[in-house]
Structure formats: C-alpha cells, structure tokens
Length: 501
Image 1 (cartoon, rainbow, N blue to C red):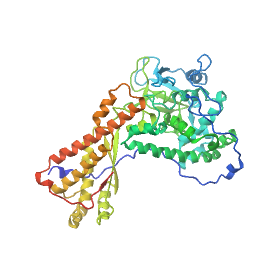
Image 2: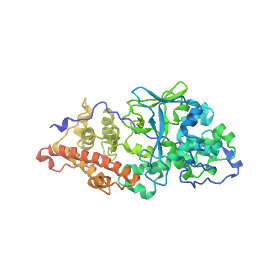
Image 3: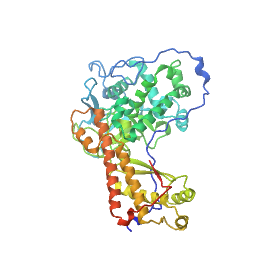
Image 4: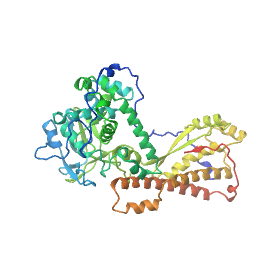
C-alpha cells in the first residue's frame, strides 16, 4: 500500500521556535534597596504621543521650526552622507501623528550602501551598562537585553531635552511601537481587542509573553543595582518605584519593535537600537538586506533596486506571522516562514511506552514531538506525522518487537490501523478549525470591508492564514483516507493512541 511506505526518516531535525529568553528570579542579594526611600511617584503618561514614559513629557511631532529632526541630529553627531530620507505616511488613527519611514533619496542599485550609522549613535548593552563584563554577566544569566534597553531609554526620557538621545526618543514616541499597519503589538491591546484572535494559539502566547515581561519588571531593581553606570547616574530612582508596570510594558513593546540583532559581535553589542533602523525601516520576510556591524558602524546594503522615494525594506528573520504580529504589529501574507505548531505525544500509560520512546529517538523524534506545518507544505507535514502516529497505534507485543529489531524505521501498518491514524488526524484538524468563532469565508468577507479597524484587520489576516493551513492539512488527510481500500473502515481499537494538541 502506498501510504505504508511513508515512514519516519533517519534524520529529522527541527529548528526551535523563535522566542525570547526571560530571566529566572535572581537571589535577593541586594539588600541595599531597603536603605532607599521612595523619592518619586510613578510617572504618568498623559500625552497620547508619549510611550517611553519619563518625568518630562516629550511631545512627539512638536513644531518643526523648533525641534531638530532625527536625521539632522544624526548628521550633526557623525552620520556621514547617506542615500535615504525620512518621509511620513498617515496614521489610521487621526488622533496619532503620522508614521515616519526611511525612503531612498536617490535611485539605488543592488549592493549600494544606503546608510552607515556610527557606533556613537547606536544604543547597545555595552553603552547602557557602561561595562562589557557586566553586560555579558547579565546575558549569561538570561536577563533580557530588551528589558535593559527599555529601562535605559526610560531613564533617558526622564532627562527630557537634556538627554543626548532626546531626538531619537522623540521619534520612538511618535512611532508608539506601531508596525507597518500602524498597529501596536498585541501586548498593548485591550482584552476586547485580544478577542479578535480567538481560536488562535497566539492569544495564549500573548498572555504568556506578558507574564514573562512582568517577571522582567520584577527584576529591574537587580539590573539597576548591577549596572554601576545606572546606579551612579540615577542614585535614587529605583526602577520599580520610578515606573509602573504598564509604563514598562509600553516601553518594552516599543523597544521590541525596533531592536536589531547584530551578527559577529560581542554579547554586549548583539542587541542594538539603531536610529534609521526599525521601525523606520519596514520588515519584509523575503528581503535579504540586513543591518550589519562593520568597523565602527552599523550599515545597510540594499538587496534590490529602489527608485527615489521608495520605502526601504529589510529582512525580519525566519519568523512566522504569529511572531511578526507580537513583535512588530504586522502580518506578511507572502511569508514563506509562516507555520503552525502541532504537538504529538506518545501515551505514557502505554505498557510499551519505553520501547516506543526508544524507537522514536532512534528515528530522530521525541516522546513529546513538535511538528511544524509550513504554508504551502501542508501535505509534506501530514506525511511526516503519520509514522509517529502509527508507532503509537502498535499494540501487539510481537509487532512491537518487529519494530524494535528492524534496521530502519519500519512500522507494520494494516488498512484499519491506517484508517484509525488518519481519522484521528482529521478529527484533530476539524477540532482546531471549530475553535475559531468565524469561518474562512467570513474572514474573507470581513477583509473585503474597507472599514475594519487596523487591529481587527491584522488579527483577521492572521487567523485567516492559520485556517487556510489547517484546511489544506485536512484536505490532504481526507485525500489519503480516500485512497484506502473499502475494508479499512472496520473498527481498529487503539487504547493507547498518541495525543495530539
């Protein structure tokens, strides 16, 4: 039978899903905090254009005759002549300032250097903490670089116009962590807005990410005490007393939307905030251009020709749309890295669990295995899952011994077992689809409505793409069922079938 030949390959490796590492609780060895008295109350965010909150409110988009723009400030402090200009596009929300973006100031060819930002204008942990050793200590202990960068700019924001970074912070205030669709990360959405993602795993992921940010917030005092530069510069501004959690979460989301991961640099410099970089640069999943660390600067070499005025795009890494939405507030309809995650687990109550676990490991799988379903490769994903599920359905000890003694990933398959395996998989896809409050057709209809709010639109785009992958998986599974002989429909009990979730 054709299907029985599709077994687990000897080499099946998966890249781990992209995720941020958040710190475990550190020991409370800094008793110094108890010697400090509360000197300031929580900062409030009264101005709608203020995101990185601080003592002195910075008004984004102030009178251009009196405020130095970001690019002019950068040129004054060492930015060499470049081939880009800042332009703006209207915001979907009339109460917010237009969003700036980097565009070509002249025609560009592949390989042209669009700009080169000197290191003196780049914010890294080495600059924030004033000590590379401390920076590496923090990263070694899994403290989030994003939390440190957010904390630093929040303190700089309190300096107002006295801060060297005032023009850059003002630009981040204007952007408010909004992505290409003028949408903030779901981390900043209300509960009602998060319901737009009902049925999608991303909703639970957002909640978990917020809990992790809360843990980061609770560790800020430790970061502050470890960083001698911060302790000396702000001796009485203990982080959790100076900033509320909500303000920190806003700042964290803003930094998350624009941080750049540099390659081939020290740990203290690998996460960087680059003026003229994101969010002023648009992310695109099929771009090959990256911000690159060179001697004394961070530069961008374009990967495609641009006409004067075209927005410049860069690569956002191999991230699925769920990560793009959480990190940057947008969804890419043509994202070849978009994927769903399916977890399958061997039943631990199975008397032959240990033998099956050994066979799975021999063939590159785990007792709790994560499968990735990539957009456009749904049939291949179903075929990869089938051998693992078949293994779980083996119940006869003699058949199990045959599997153990075989040289390759051989699993005896009867027609009724194959039908049971495929039925379980089909039911799983149907259950996931039933978890969404709307159908794929209803999503298509909503997206055709030009009156959708930006958040509702981007959320609908995401769940629609998820449903398309699930529908394609279900169709592939149904096609395999239809290829089976008629007698395969007879009952085939499997008391210890694998678990899908």
